Length: 107
Image (cartoon, rainbow, N blue to C red):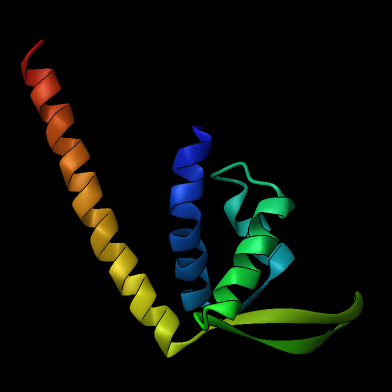
């Protein structure tokens, strides 16, 4: 899959997943990678940025498998950002679909 496509959609995907349920970094990667190949090195900097921009907050939960895990939770600001991204995504995909339809009708 095109790297630029992934980069453009990853923030949107991460916020969508975390809106549904708080996540720790590795669990987030496990949810994404069956559908889109990504590396840990892509997700953690994004999570740090989303926390810095106040779209996510963090808290720690004990783990039976080692040290406490850092969980990410969406904030009100993050929900607003997600709504903005959803509108932008829909507008973008609508435009792309129009080009596809036009291309198919010209064949």
